[in-house]
Length: 65
Image 1 (cartoon, one colour):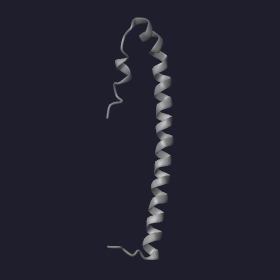
Image 2 (cartoon, one colour; image 1 turned 90 degrees about the vertical axis):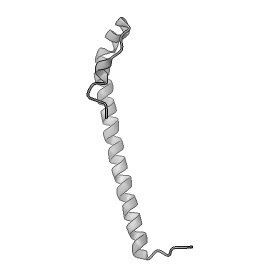
Image 3 (tube, one colour; image 1 turned 135 degrees about the vertical axis):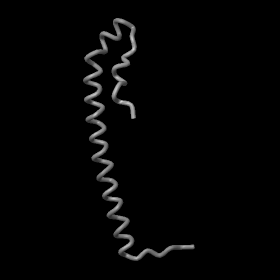
Image 4 (cartoon, one colour; image 1 turned 60 degrees about the vertical axis):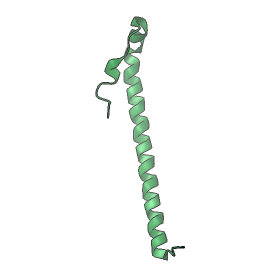
């Protein structure tokens, strides 16, 4: 069974796709900014944990979803 799309239906699908792509791109940028921020924060304690052979539990606090 084939469904026929009207030109308006095709246009609607295309605009939804563009919105989804824009939201995904914005989310990716936010994600990269978050990762960079966390990495910078974690790096401030990495040498201490390496020296002490300890696990950085504080890196996980407040970041769990």
